[in-house]
Image (tube, rainbow, N blue to C red; front, top):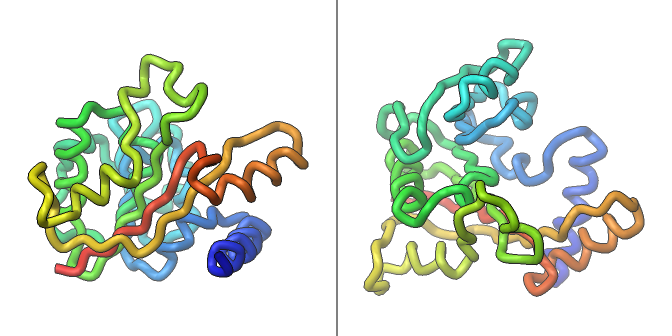
Length: 203
């Protein structure tokens, strides 16, 4: 419990610096790839930032300073060499994929991630309103990822990954007071709208 509140304090200090607190978990990585980078919201946090998006329009809007490198591609078929990155971000992408595509995407992350690298996965949970859209296919709760990493599981697995951290996040609200309230209670899974998982590749 104490660690959760310590993380909240740390995250607030990151926010004051204009830094995404969750992406800061990869701040020590040398080469970071953001899969589904959109308009490059994490670009300023990394010296060697690479973004990949399936949308050419997003790529044109992203990284106006030209600091990073952009790739157009599909998360399930990454046009990237094996073990190219020591940090990978998959933020609000998985819920847009059907299970077959999601599994392919996670295997692609494993393929391009170096040994000793870290993978930041953020996705939405099945809560009121989260899946009232045609673009969201299905939720992938933390237990589904844990099963994927379990060598004794009868379903497809990914070997060599270890979950280092799991954070639950509360829903956004326009009212600042309520937004702060949901941010705190959202740390507990029953009230969360989405979650962030930090996965380490051991071998």
